[in-house]
Image (cartoon, rainbow, N blue to C red; front, top):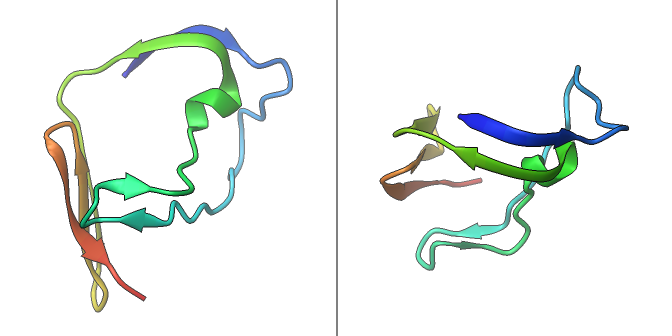
Length: 77
């Protein structure tokens, strides 16, 4: 990913940013509480990326695929 913009003056560039429950609804492809980390770190930005994919997997609670081709799966409690 290439990000072009101005880094926020008070942005922490090291450490953990915390946990966020996006409150997603896989059947609707929506998230009620999405966190945009770009807004937290950049003021006025643009970005571009090639194909990408993240796969989140738990041994007992399912798999969630988040990719440039779409999202699928579910991780349950």
